[in-house]
Length: 336
Image 1: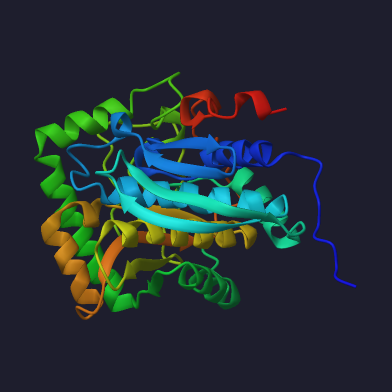
Image 2: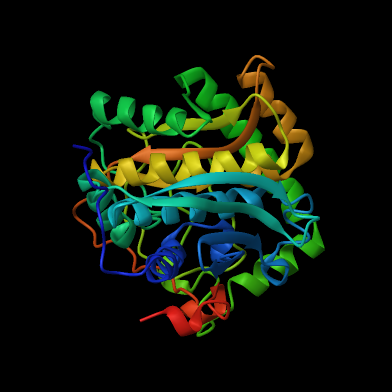
């Protein structure tokens, strides 16, 4: 006798809408949340939100698509936590009305306990820009983080001490280049003064002074209110997220890999800080390729460390209302 497929008493459209809403927890450059979801009767579409793009910082849309990739992975995991599997059609063609991906072929095959635990990590994941503790990241945690990125189609190279020094010089040069760009400074000012809008970086998540780090962090152009303490990042590890090609679909997969790696890090209690400055400047992005021996294209730098337990972490960054990122007009009558 053939086994009956699993059933659910919750309509698919509800699961899709809730997955899109959960994807709002994903990290994004400057907390721009540059994604829009459209819920259909049997599919979920992901598009870019051009009004939340960074024209000066990210003119080619690398970080925009990467951010959307992180949201795509969040949505996939949220669906799996509810028992749904999907086929992912990655188009990554912003010229086509910004369409990046479509989740189709939905099947209810039973709740995934691992995905359920990962959804819990989504809800507590945050960016802590303070110096990390003196305790090193455990080797098994680091290996799992690297594996999580690889499983999503990108790779994470953990840098050696000498490579970190090269990275530090590269990041410092990128910071100098960006500080001299008036359009970029104006854009950064806009996204750090968005209080009450649901986007951007409020003062409470920005350091009150430049933290002591081997690799210089971004200068946000204004002090925040987050106490940084006297610590350093000597115990931190730095990784370079990269892939074989440098096309929009590769940036999308890099975002999915970032999400998978970051959520795995959260499960292990490892703090992640994305450092995008060195990939924003074409010259320093090319320098980063040399750390890969020219065998890949860098997408993002990550700092990995254990948060200092002596200091309370920053609050979560604000999020847009679901109605601003999820379009349910095509299925509104079916939701409950």
